[in-house]
Amino acid sequence: MVNIDSNLRDFIIKKFPDRTVKGKHHDHSWQSSRWLYVTTVLTTEEKIHYEYLGGKNGCVELHLEGKYLEEEYRDFRRKLYEKTRQDPRLRWKTPQGRNLRACEINFQINNREDVIDAFKQMMDIFDPLIEEASRKHKEQYDTKPYEGEVSLNENLKNEQVCMLGCSLGQLISNSLIIPDYQRNYCWEDKEITALWNSLKEIPKEGKKYHLGTIILQKLDENKYAVIDGQQRLVTLALVLKELNYKGPIPLLGQTFRSKESDKHVSNCKWLIKQLKAAGFAGDLWHRILYNLNFSVLILTESRLDLAYTFFSNENSKGVPLSDFDILKAHHLRYIHIEEQAEHMAMRWNKMMSDNKEQLNKSIAKHLFRMRKWIRKRYYNPNAKRIVKDEFSASPIIPEIPPFGESFNFNEKIQGGTHFFAYIEFFVNKYEHFSSLRQVKELQDKLQRESHWKYADVIETLLFAYYLKFGDQYLTDALFCIASVIAQHRYQTNRAMTYKIQEYAMNSEIVMMIEQATSPTFFLAECLQTAKVSGKTLNDENIKKRFYHQLKELFEQLSDELTEPTITKKYNYEYEH
View 1 (spheres, one colour):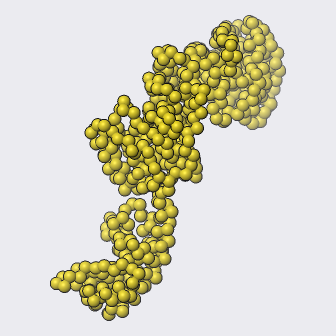
View 2: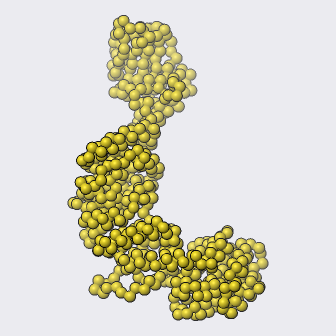
View 3: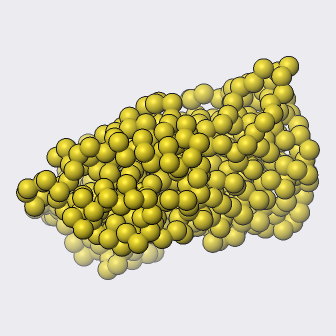
């Protein structure tokens, strides 16, 4: 055993002049309580070092202490362990239930030179690994200032309101202030934890994660007042600060007047530290800055009451704005009487809450298709914002005011109150239509296999008929429409959705309905185009199964077929 004292310390310093050497070796202390350490290749980092311990035999160990035991350095520790665990010279020490924190080298120490040799062997083994692990850790955890677009480019010259999408980095790089009239910062553990969990879901590789809507009022160039969203923005700013983000965050220069807000901010800082300690990815700061996106509504003037009606906070959980959210904001800006705008917004919110499914089916699906099909306009159903584009306000000649609206499905959309009334009218129409026996039987009998794809377009065309003629001869109309659309099934091996919809458009059934002044004209023309029968199909394949399902459908509704010509056609087709 080599005694640990000032002489040994001085000897080690001479051997390793470029390293920090420190120790504990009081003259009257037990040798077993003494130690000397030498820093690793990270010469300024004393929390990771090689340590000679006193005792009966003495030994040299690699020690990881302080920050190197925190969650942030888990991968760092793991890399050292994985690279050395099979080295027979080494033995890792892991106290039960604790992190890797020490590794001993099996080396017989009899004199001072042996101590030096043990240190050198540890350096030869670990210094390159520590250097590599440190470099990778720095690449992962060392934050850099935001380098993306900063200006919001709102282009508000001719508009009082505009909406755009931007990343958090772009948003917080601007001068954001919290007006005095705003509520205090009030988020508690539940909201902060939910946001942190959402942040961990932000995808990598440039994919965007939407975190709702922020409403700003433009005050000056690159200066905005936060009207709605301050709780999220303040919390996100505190998260970035805790992640050691080195870029400027002007929002953190804001102060709250109330002690209650200061208390909540302090709690937020503390909780973020705890959540961070439980584990997070090293590139989280980068994903928060670049991949976390918002829809930002910017106002040129206060109109604060109206601003709060544009969007609800339901969009703050990672759900992007729907086309209907955007249409709401788009058309509200055409209403210049604030009380009317608020009233329309409340009615819209109620409809979105109570009848969202009906809204999607009646407007986004059936009415949208009818408006496209009547003009034979092809569209990509997967394209972004197609519903928003279809139902946005149509252009007008400024000198000629619009008039004569009658709630025809294919009429031009007027900005403002007309849009809200138009949508409500057709949602109510569809609500009644979907409760009819014919529609329920259609959905029930053709729901299996790929039959539903045909039922879907048949329902659209039947809704077009219902809007024109109500429930007069509705079963007869269903038979005629289904007979035409069924021809595609009987002549096609694969039921491809876009091909079925294209066939429905090219059938011109929507135009037949639009031109007919009476059901008789439509029924006669539609029936003439149904020329392919399904009863002649021989194989018991999906085509024949579709035929049998149609047969079952009209057996249920046959008592409501009232027109003799159509009844005769039905009896022939299904052999009644």
